[in-house]
Length: 159
Image 1 (cartoon, helix red, strand yellow):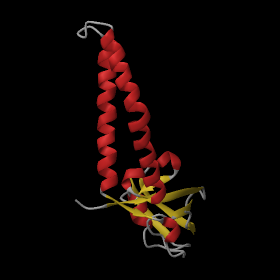
Image 2 (cartoon, rainbow, N blue to C red; image 1 turned 180 degrees about the vertical axis):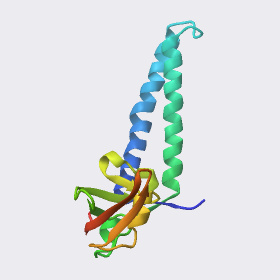
Image 3 (cartoon, one colour; image 1 turned 120 degrees about the vertical axis):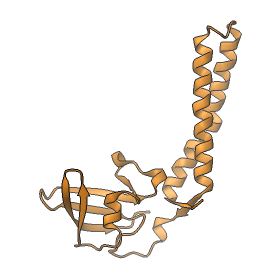
Image 4 (cartoon, helix red, strand yellow; image 1 turned 60 degrees about the horizontal axis):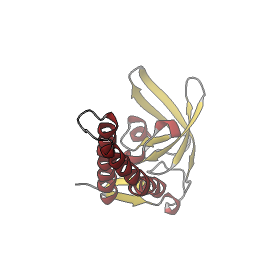
């Protein structure tokens, strides 16, 4: 299995989520199952079935996070050589060639991508179009609505 790249911040977020699941949510759902069992007949006990389902989700997420973290290649963005070249981990400020509207994205690993937070996966079409380019270059992205062009306004290395 290949090692998936992830930023140090992203790995820390996943570890924090894993710790919360193990130390807070798992014990809480175990207590809820025990309480529901005390109510008697389990066949018609909705609380019991809901708690068991929740336990399944929690255990599944714990296994998923442990597997992802064990196969992750953690890259410390703050130790990257500064420059104006777009590489994994950088934050890019883009300007839409048509509207001039600016947007900011950080290129991160697939495991930590979240477009709402401005984190785009390295495997995304936008990130693939940007990798290797420099400040001032124009990147063309094939989108469902047609070709979009973005000018790279700034390349920043934020830790």
